Length: 224
Image (spheres, rainbow, N blue to C red):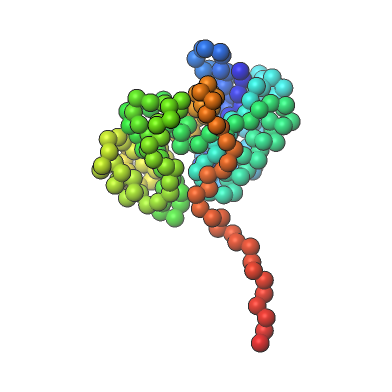
């Protein structure tokens, strides 16, 4: 199977990954834009570049996988909507996986994945060592959103270390032995394939965890 992987939970990440039956994953291309607000402008050119470098036409793809967050509303919506539209045009399946799961994939031991939630908060989820995406108990907690102290409190009572972009933003997380790790096309595809093998769902439901900052007005008040 050849997969197109898309994630907009932070910046924009796009790549093409070969997933042979019973074989190891092979990354054919990978592009990353760190801009957390330029998804609309970046995504389509990145998809074109990733397919061109991999020498894969849209019709040769078996599936598209997209990160479902957690992340702010606008960026996440752009990624998921683009993945659905591209999959329909290419005539292939589309799968969704939690972006934090994709970061946790391939790590050793128990970890807490942290990403920037803005407002001096992080998105986070805790993962058990020795397990993986195909195991029901792999994700021990989350995804959740809250202050970095929520993560340090969790680590104080559990084994593990913090990883992910949140560790570069908050020294308290880095002091817990944290390391910076990001979403990769390989991680997205690996999680999707593992969950498909055991018949686990791969929903496209976006993990916003918060209400959007923009609210619809309730109308003008009448003058008295």
